[in-house]
Length: 88
Image (cartoon, rainbow, N blue to C red; front, side):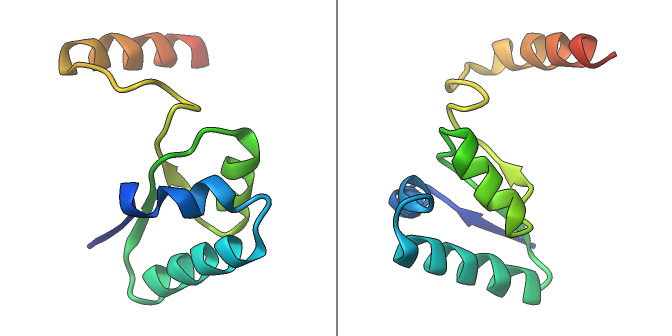
């Protein structure tokens, strides 16, 4: 089962670094998802600070412009292969 913090909530992700209310709401959603044994996926991650916040709150599945712009399916394989080669 997955819980996705997605586009409807991207403004929470946008503000987690500077807005304590957004940080509290995002943290509560992550905790709630974990308590229900859900995998948490955060969308809209654009900065290293947002990523650090999510990681510090045990949210390790993320996507957003920090990693890549949206890609057509045929470009995803090439990107993943390039990243795999870079990690070896």
